[in-house]
Length: 397
Length: 178
Image 1: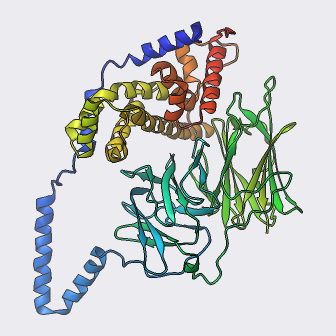
Image 2: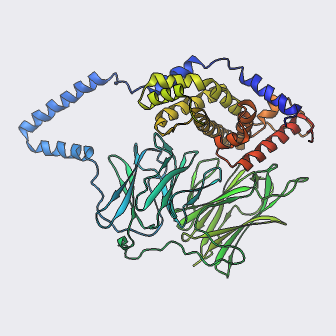
Image 3: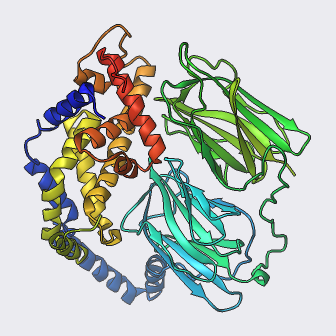
């Protein structure tokens, strides 16, 4: 039931909003311009004339020296021809990363099709307007994903999955959800598009061995997923991290995790500890305390796996590369360590898997840390109280 | 939510690339989106940029809109744009403040000071303002507000409660227990 304060708030918001009496004509004009087809450039006649002059010059030179034609034509052919179709490469059962760091990408289409020729595979093609941005491809043992940045879970068709993350990337005209129901690729859904980090969850029927090709003209990332178990021709395929047996502390899982609650006031980070446990895991502990007079709770969090150790700092946007070959990104909403955490913000414990743990951001009650891992690993999270802690166990070999 | 048939025909024309039809969509939803973005961003120019970007994205993605009312879909895009725009601007402010070059940005207020609602609203985070604007200005249910901001319903309940409590604290209003 609304009380007087809520009614006052409602009235205030309407009053403030209605200060804008009509939709500005200039804004309507800007939108009209934005959706209009691109006009022919005014320089077209001049460019055409310049082109004609170049052709005449080349023709004159060619008459004098025929070799000129080869010199001129071959780079143009290279420029116009799309890069060749992908040549067969071995499939590998491992996470992948690549692309160009710092490049602003624009995803324009996702195409999916089955290729029956041996070895059978399903092909996903991610088209970009210019260049392939930095990306991570992470395999996981279930088709449940955690949405960025809400932390909400979503389960796609299939029984296993791949998470594909593009950094510095925007998307245009691509459906949020596709269900091709191919032998391997069952569903592709946008699971995050926030602050230029674009994530897709891909639900697979079972197989997770992949090959990744970066092609140009046009720029596209090709991800092939095997449809038969015999298709893996990789000399030493790395299996998906095995899930150890459940213990009293609960099972490990090779997928992203989320939990906690977004409750005010922001909790204060007081400690970060990292240690190896002989039971077969490295443990990272984030410990919190409530502000004076407030009750304790674990802030809302997400723990996301990634296939590289590159992270983006918040709020600077600067890229940082940690030790190791893959990573975890841990984000708390409603938490800060600015006034409460006094220890190192870059810990390098050199454990079997956890190589580095570093703070990535502490801004507007969004606290983020990253962990550099020596190998892709399954994780387990535990929410503990007295004191309030988030425990992240990272499986070791 | 299903579309009324007339609106359905407009959207169908948009899918066929009819820009005049899309301008009808802009006319229908633009003002409310702009007002909501202005409530969140507290800045007219930024709000206009966010709404412009919202409609450009909507035009590019119109093919992915299913047979549903485009209002909630546009709201989702607009909220994402508004919150991202707010965070971009405040990242810059935070950096410049850190180096002592600028003293603007969010003002800290002492717990004793009681502000009016407008100034108290300025003190909320962009996510809280978005929740309050959708729920109390657009009169969306908690469930629809959660969908627009892509968070679980329980998180939204908690976010609204937290934001209200902060507004009450800042304005010195007493909470009336049920």
